[in-house]
Image (cartoon, rainbow, N blue to C red):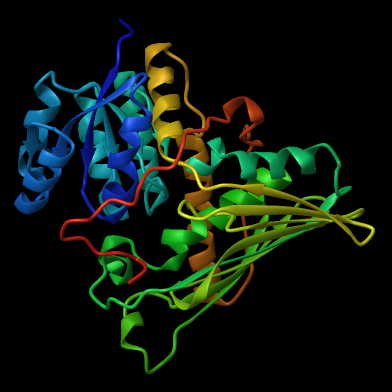
Length: 368
């Protein structure tokens, strides 16, 4: 019988409950959910029973779990600011780490995480689910193959109404705000579609003065990334407008649009326009989380370096921090030149069927 990688899911918030936990059914070929970690006893009891997981731990018992011999890897779904803590502790115990994006909120935290896994010879991957998703990979391949000529302009919006004022996404101390929460997707998409690294950023942020939701974090941000060879990427993210999750790429010979580009609960539509003629491709909703679990487990089993790696996560965090610096100074900020990162390609495409939306337990949804 083929060996399976045994996982603990750390943090049982919204993304864990609606996407990560159900994904293990579609990842059962090489992955097994064997433990849960949360400070909420109600969540542990209810979700443990639902997913037939007997090993239930509080955060205070996390070190005991890591030493128990029960697990090979953790999938970290905690607030952004806690990613470093649980990653470093796991790596020091010889446990592999799959962590939700962003990798962390500061470059120093990212480097500490990378140093810990390197020192302990464990693996670390950032959960960029779209690196395994067919519509996004197809868009990237079409652009790389010259379908729209030379790509010159990326435009994107990723927005929704976050109505719960107590949601952790509105707490600065938790690494909240739309830039860290959803801006990462736009940055990462522009990088893998252009297959370049940006060299300069200019950004502005805004919050309505009478909206109490945004006392600690920005309501919205508008960002321009300047790339080599006269390429520009523009995007807007917001927690205070009607929902949108699209990107457009305009080239010298055509244009490409992906609707619902960043969503995991909706169908996607990819449209390529050339000479006023549209070619439309439809992509049905599917499980986007099982593929990254399957892939990471294969990397562990076969001792391969995972991609998207921690370097990919660090690149986005550097850009995020430069965005905040630009917004504060109201000036453009130069970005350090980095080597081009390896990009998602069709060889990474993994497809799994969708699952039913599960009932959640004591959780804050971003779409209330």
